Image (cartoon, rainbow, N blue to C red; front, side, top):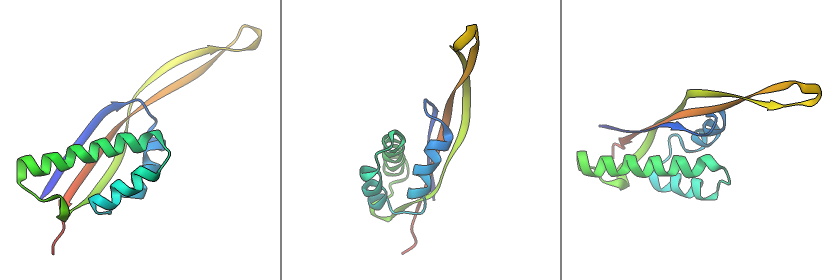
Length: 112
């Protein structure tokens, strides 16, 4: 049985989140926590919180045990993009794109 958790409009670019998600995809929950604790990225804290939420959903809604869960899917989609401008030399302006991402985690119970 699949259990999902989503976080919309997280203030980090999806490209940066995908680096962390690639490291934890397919891992058991405890292994994923250990990997995320070591990683120095800002997005590792965000991903850890979403995994905690997905595990809570699995326990509360479906009465699943955390010991048997693993991360089946983990992906980050593009969210909104704020377009800002920064002053440059000679009276010009340079665009700054502040990207947001939607992070999705899908857990599934491992067959023993």
